[in-house]
Length: 313
Ligand SMILES: NC(=O)C1=CN([C@@H]2O[C@H](COP(=O)(O)OP(=O)(O)OC[C@H]3O[C@@H](n4cnc5c(N)ncnc54)[C@H](OP(=O)(O)O)[C@@H]3O)[C@@H](O)[C@H]2O)C=CC1
Ligand SMILES: CC(C)(CO)C(=O)C(=O)O
Image (cartoon, rainbow, N blue to C red; front, side, top):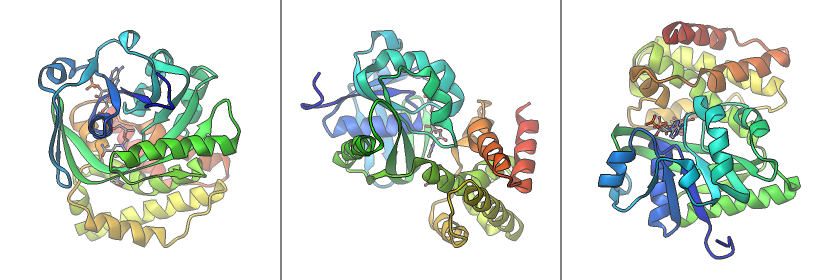
């Protein structure tokens, strides 16, 4: 299918993120193909459903659902909605599904996720990062609860074109999400944006697991709130040491944004409670390694990782 007409979109990992964005793109008229694993039967039978505080109850009754990536048609855009812990296993599937010159977008949290996947991808493929600002989780097979937000920003990482052409590709990707009614923009500096998002994910993801609490509970207690601010300050210092200066005021800004959010359990909390692997490498170890290489210690982040490793052993 020619991309001039209508790009075909593939979703690799149809969980909360893959299901939500895939459904929104399908409702906007795109041909979207979904790779599923444990929820294949339910989604083939009942379709995909999103219960959204913003968009109401959405149903995609007829889903192009696939269990085997080898059977999927080649896609111009491949959106990876699996957890980062699956990336190495998924690389051969991504290579299969992506059209020659395809665009692969990692809709994932964490740091250096593109660097880890890049060597496993075919050289002709474009690789982008997609930062999702959204609160979604699965409540049943094929059913996604959308609590708040919904934006997604794209940054070009690597591929067979110049940086400038890569930015144009990121703009084309953002345009797809905009057509689906979602806030989306292209970013010039993917790595800096990943650090900035970690200022939120590093404290809240891990502490929600360790203290078995949602964001509202974590914000209401003076001790956990102070710890969140300390962790954020460490991430800002690390980002700055790595060459991406972030303003100190980001701490107060993010605390304020979180207070305005509904009580929210980050995806790591769901992973821990359902005994799935937690994204410790991408969200903690990779930024810790980068900070250490830049001569910056993150003692509280390091301790948080050690406690999470204890829990996941
Ligand atoms: N949830 C949120 O609000 C946000 C999440 N993020 C980030 O988005 C990413 C995705 O998170 P989220 O959507 O919550 O995760 P989910 O656990 O809801 O979804 C992951 C999906 O990937 C599927 N998957 C994993 N491996 C395979 C495989 N080999 N073949 C087919 N399917 C596979 C899983 O299938 P199965 O059901 O069989 O395990 C599941 O459907 C993470 O990096 C997260 O940090 C970012 C911002 C917000
Ligand atoms: C920060 C938040 C909650 C919303 O922007 C999010 O995107 C996440 O859980 O990673």
